[in-house]
Length: 191
Image 1 (tube, rainbow, N blue to C red):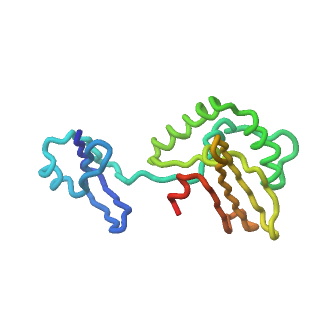
Image 2: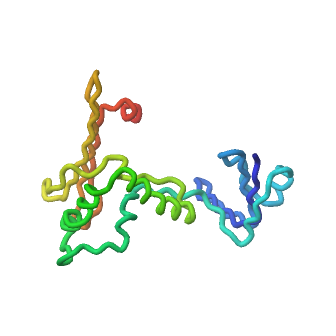
Image 3: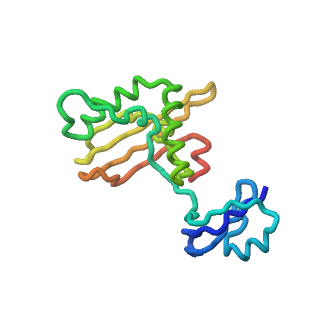
């Protein structure tokens, strides 16, 4: 099916970033086939289904590369006792307890809320860190910097596959460096 989203302010955000007033985006199936002025694309795709975007901004979908779907379950949850004085205490007093208590069905249900919110707000691509690696197996200090290590292993009758991600943070909590190793076939293709 061909659909013409027309009469909106189209912002491409691409290498040749454009703002097209009274613009259109034409899709076929799941792909974008044309971007341009509403007038030009009405002529080029006269039989397309029309969605009027007057008064709206049409943008590419946003990407969220860091999210924890299960954390939706903890909205409004207060940590009992004294307030935590650092991030490790927050992990120990709340998040690691939540991680151990959640079942797979809980994570699935809690993921539905942020996914709906993302779609409603234009985020179409997400990465959930718990699903990618799970809880860190080690949190500590390395060369004076906070370091987190995630490890995942999978044994089969033939071999053992494993992957490890180590992230080092500076004093402000910003990722300073990382290392990744893996012998999973799908990860080997990325190198």
